[in-house]
Image 1 (cartoon, protein in one colour):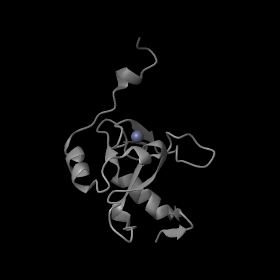
Image 2 (cartoon, helix red, strand yellow):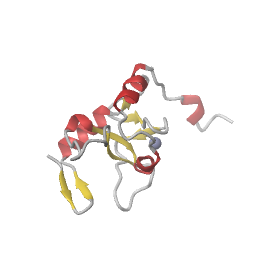
Image 3 (cartoon, helix red, strand yellow):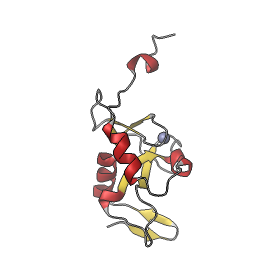
Length: 118
Ligand SMILES: [Zn+2]
């Protein structure tokens, strides 16, 4: 179970794995390696997990429904998003929105990110 220390929440490795699993998959990418951030719709790379020395576009753990008091820290409510996007989300409870987003087949655009393209 996640622990709240000060204003920081510390997650277990199992919870981190679950948060990654709950993130939106890209149909042409291995889900163990790459997922999509539901907030900005850009990709995230599993090995680039956020740390204090990390990049703001590394992934971190957010709550799908952050409306409940006390906070619902069950692993089903955890989701990986970019660290930078946590503050950009509009909905405190993203449960319904996320269900809709997951109904869409998302694809990583190889051409867009290819270094060969103009
Ligand atoms: Zn993002």
